[in-house]
Image (cartoon, rainbow, N blue to C red; front, side):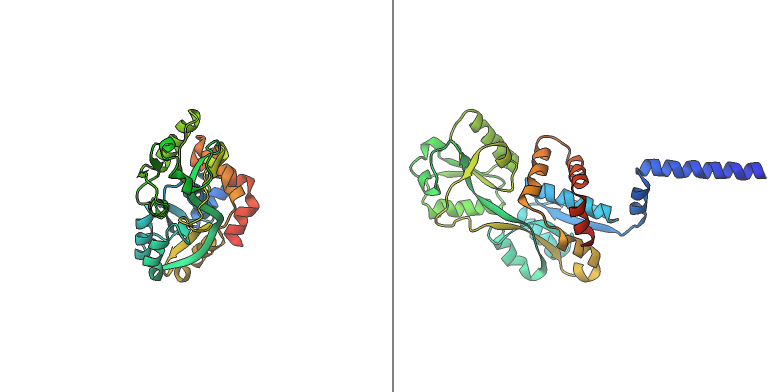
Length: 291
């Protein structure tokens, strides 16, 4: 009997050690065992929003939640949030870039607050290009191949650019692409020292890699500085106050996001880059989790 009891103790000990080894650490086991349920986050596939959303995902996981990330275009982002298909997003750009979507759905969505300030959208050229204003694109149409290189056609910045073409009476086309396609075209032009104009925004890793400049926008086609804004589905604050409070506290700066974005672009896997950022900024993460 004594021998049988000793065997059972040894087996139980081995099972416990195996469980801890699989989960990674006692802290991870505790976090997983809390079972606070799932948090769903919608986001658009822009470099800054990929960084922000993946960071917030790991913050929620540290707080004991399972997290699902749902990638959508800008228009469906608001539609799905209004329907309650996911809990929140940190990918809203206001007041101008996604103004039309916000105005269409504002009565059905909870405005939480900004998570990144000092954002900007507009037309960008390499620093060696010798014009300074959008107005000058008329005169140098040939040097730019008669086109502005854009991103996905549903993006707010593309609608802003259509407005800019009309407002500035530009005789040029707007070439739809993707964020990656636009960046590839920009890289190729810079390597050849050619003139190119692209739709771009801050934060973006491109400003860390190359010497770029915004073209002045005297007619304000692209509005003023933007804010990356957190929105939630109606009812989240009342139903899941801790989830809502973490979203409300989530805020960082241009200086904080820039190195993370560059690491991701340079090929470090997103989850690994985010874990590294969290390990270097524990106080910031604690602020988001518990205030």
